[in-house]
Length: 364
Image 1: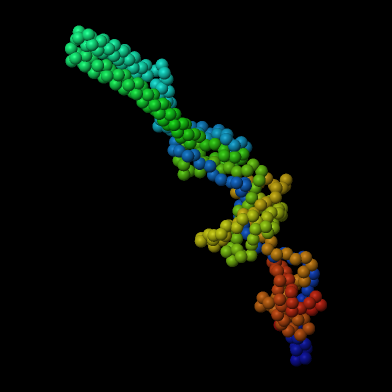
Image 2: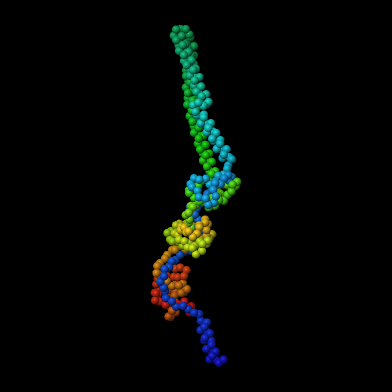
């Protein structure tokens, strides 16, 4: 092969190996900028319910999936000491209630003391009058008359003491009955602590105990929440926290239902950062869909829409150089642009070029 043919062959090879490049102009399209997040679907007002007292699970009144009304019992535990205390309080109340009645043996005995004291006073006062009459007739001594008068005075005091004693006894018995009633009421309240009640209309999503197990107030037993309403707890990177705010639209994709996109809105932003994974917690609503049944704890991915624009001037991201520059197709000159909102594929152009500028993705 002569030198001319060899040179021509090399030029053709170089031209064939030269990388291709694309020339284009900015275009108009709708664009949305979003923050990525991931999390779980949970029922609205989700919480774990716990019993207020220690004991062994005696009975579980519900099963997973049940819907209950406020005030309905969910679970009961047994505690022998509490049962004994309640029975003791009930017995004391019955005894104290009977004691304060007018025909009770205690009050009848006190009333009998009044009757005896009144009879004694009646006798002694009559005797004192008789001795005074005899003294006036010089039929007795002054000493005997004074003794009779003193005895009558003592009997009167004893009668007054007996009456006062009955008054005090009645007040005491009434107070004891009231205290017994309070103690019994308290034990009834304590007894209610051994039954877990629904605090609102809710659905049972999980039960983490069995009959016979020992439970305590610190132990979550039943997961519950609204029957139909669901929300999403999301984790977003701490670098994106400043971009999100309540009311922003959210687009969800469930792991259990690929290519099904549901809408919602950001409802709450928790003002703290998880130190382990450097994320912030946010809560968003999610629309119901007949295409999927929600389960508590479902995994979900989301895009929180932080900005959107209709008919924006955009270029594809692969035409960007050094983040803020594009290359003019005619002279390969780099021009700095002013960027607007961005998504994964496109960048909005606010300045630097217009819709008639031809740009290239050529590296050289």
